Image 1 (cartoon, helix red, strand yellow):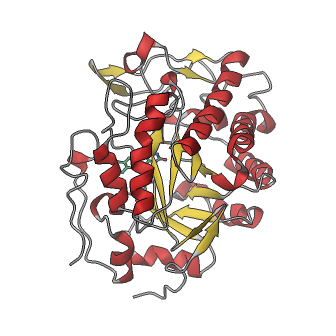
Image 2 (cartoon, helix red, strand yellow):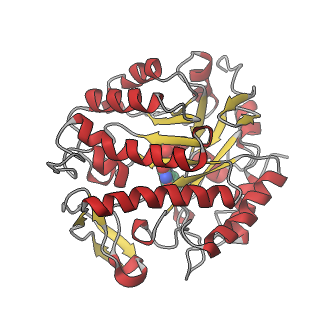
Length: 359
Ligand SMILES: Cc1cc2nc3c(=O)[nH]c(=O)nc-3n(C[C@H](O)[C@H](O)[C@H](O)COP(=O)(O)O)c2cc1C
């Protein structure tokens, strides 16, 4: 067993003193209640079962109707949604946990059939993604998105700020801005979905402008010590192409560092060529690392990155799906339950709240 000493010690992240450095990564599970994109009592049970994490980051939550990319994902733009999340945050807090809401606008990854009023998906430029959306009317090709006007951009920034205020009102301890995995914020950073020639594209400053303005607006709404952001440089997921991650992300992170955020959640991947080391040097506040592992199962060994100083916290996705008591299992290095991908998205309690705990 490798040397792991720090992972189980407390750490201050923004406003919150976390009991350990093990983070539940954000994961869409498509179990919200429709109509209304509401959180449910089953979701409250699911998250509260995982409250031994130092920090839980919720599934992606749309800040607006048009920001919804998948079926049965929850929102944070209506009064009813705010009320529905209360049962989740109360249950997590009663179990001793801390929970942030991930604000996720899917941009071109979506479909009008997912949206009340059949709103067309929007993106920095009118470039369709390859592939299909799973809608209420079955699988359908991703449409050519509407190119956002300046007014659309400003409204979307306001939607993020409003959703952040709603998150706090619903009892969340903070929010994570989803800047990763090919959704709207990442689309602005990309070279193939952002073909704009105005101030929101064309140069490095232009490409980082939307992520920065969203973050500043969210900070103004709820305070920097309640705001994190997730980034995944060079992640080609959802058809993203990035030609110069070094210039783009060092510029972005340098600017973000001035805002004194609660954390940066960085997703590692092999195409980054060690960019994370440079990012680490630019970022003095807490860094959550989602470690990339190719040659072994994830587990206790990933926590060594904290002792080595490469990160302050480590996030786990799939292991948290199948191991509600993951921190205890990491302490003993297993045994781990295996997650069943067939129940990742949609359905009810099966594969959601029925995974066993140790002992
Ligand atoms: C079922 C599932 C849903 C996911 N949904 C999201 C999401 O809503 N937002 C996000 O940022 N990442 C999402 N991810 C990515 C995870 O947060 C995580 O980065 C990824 O699973 C790799 O970490 P892991 O190897 O520990 O699972 C999802 C992953 C899975 C397996």
